[in-house]
Image (cartoon, rainbow over all chains, first blue to last red; front, side, top):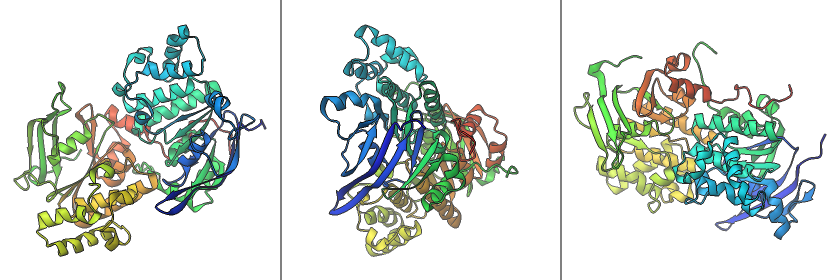
Length: 261
Length: 267
């Protein structure tokens, strides 16, 4: 066994809403090996996005620890945190909300190169073209406005932006949920290809167990802020132990072809 | 494809086209199609295929300035259905289709009061009854709640209750489950199925999901680039799709029987 890339132990986080205390994360632990995909599945409101936001340092947990690349991740701040962020990137559900709407594709992709000083200015254009090609877009897309792209193209740009920093881990929070069936399938294929080529690890968060199953090596099922079940993807789908996993399996729409059983 | 008998046609489209204001290209058409009274039809297509434009044209809910060509007749009734009274429409995002400053009771009673001429008291009782029929808990208390106090799935149930409040014979559900969790989606599909069957309503279900289309509808119309590219019995389209569009939607379908994309060690 290689050392884990990410090790999360006992995360807790609660919010106050209308005078009530809502527990979003309740003693959440998980680990992830380099190059592995962990699928995090559960219904809305069960803490999946809170976990994603804690992992990328957008919100602080109340308790627990995170080790990432052998470092105490939660203990990082200031310049060391900014420098380390490039190794852990995030892709959100709605790329339109995640981009400056007035940005061009080229500016979205050069920002990370500039901020993290990953490439000299003279190499930006070539690097942007390379990133666009890697996510199945054309170099000519660099001049387009973010608003001129389709939802699927925008999500490809969001993935390219994450890839620009050559991260070890990308957290994908409902990254394919707003997309059409056909576009969704292409983005899932792209994610798997990129992982094969570069050994990236993913945390793939979704309410859609079928999409999670398609790309994940292991699956963790969340309910009410807790991980109620986790294990190899095939086992979770074939022999679920929790009521939450069984409900998610039952909800997957199946193509019922006549006379084919 | 089973063409409905002409005399039973609820809605008859001949050369129907739609062009939005300010757009050089038509968004739809020309479309020739018949919808039979009481049938359960799915309109399926990818984003931008014209499926919602077709549904809105049928409902008479196109935005101002949209230009219609061709004809859209209602042979069975001889007149256009009145939106709200004869035809209910449920939109994709109940967060936008419900009025945020009206209570759930006000939104659901509005249609009943206007179209059924009920008194305020009778409309309120009717609304509570409708909320119970869409399986929302504690309807009496819910009448005073606001949309933001409900979950997405609950809001969609309210939107369905409002759409059927005046007892329309036709229900158009336009991508109503796309913004919802899979578990909530399954519950909403089951609800739509039961409600429209119990009432013998004509159901027009707009979706990009072939599995949901086949689950709810007897007949599927496949759209592509503003045109109707294929229509037929749901089972036939699933078994023997003819158009590239239908095949693409079927190929893109992922469920738990689909081989995973990642190479994994045998369990």
